[in-house]
Length: 427
Ligand code: SPD
Image (tube, rainbow, N blue to C red; front, side, top):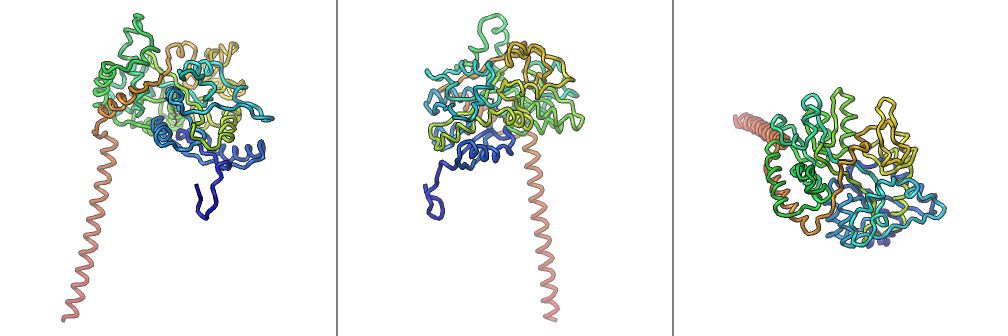
């Protein structure tokens, strides 16, 4: 590739990072550039791009073969990328630079990555966790009771018509609804939550589709990232969302006296992990590995968590300490921070306690059935417009009409003026 001016581009001085939007403290980017130079003596410039949904990112790499150096997919997408041979193994040899990754990674996250089915490859050799969390219900306690919010069926409750926002993430929604629809089967031991994550038959998809078509009648919006603002402004009362968005919204809402809460429903829910990987079309593998290491450095971890509301995979003691809040009740997070962490004053939305995490399960790739899910999702969403879209369009149409009217008025005033002048001239 040649740059304008005829110079050949040098990819060893560029690092292309492709990450979720609102997922890091962006002031860490120039700091990485400086740190990289200090550690290696080499210069690098980061080109930072963002996406809202896993599938957008995956398609750019899978179909577009784009040369991102480091990207941040979720667990089930890491599984797919491993199975389709789209990832390069990571290099944890940083010479004299500390290896922050292995020093700090929570044993829980390592064990979860072991469960990723990478077609003979261990995900821990190809991916390093970044943030993790749960999928649950964010709700406004003024309008929705704790009891109502404790079941996934809250998204199908007529009382909340036009006040419901749903994450526009078909896999995440499907997983929660299949757990909800099979709650009796789980209770009576006919199926496990893990088996349900691989339920991809036409019959299962049809059952979720029927349910979601009822939900759709009540939904105000399918959101990739704007649900948290809708909730903070009390435009939404119920949001099927990710815990990090929940934390962010709860904090913002507190400032304006709005009582938002987050719960992982009783029927079970998914726990997810987003991790850094190096796609096989990467061009700057060295800097990509250093980026992953830098993102695991405890001070950077703490800043990223503070800015985004999402929780790091780091089990470092200083990270735990940074989020201890003496006003909170102690919870058991030993599964994450180790055996001594049975009673720590942490926010259970950030770190679910041991009992809650026992109800969780992790998603898996659907392989060729993914297309069936995507078609089902577009049938559910259809072309119908929700209230917010209708409002925006209405405002737009009124603005256009006003503009046309004012132009018409101006031009008629102008032509009156000219005809007046001409009349005077004629006289
Ligand atoms: N704004 C960043 C959101 C990232 C959340 N990732 C969750 C993935 C669940 N499959």
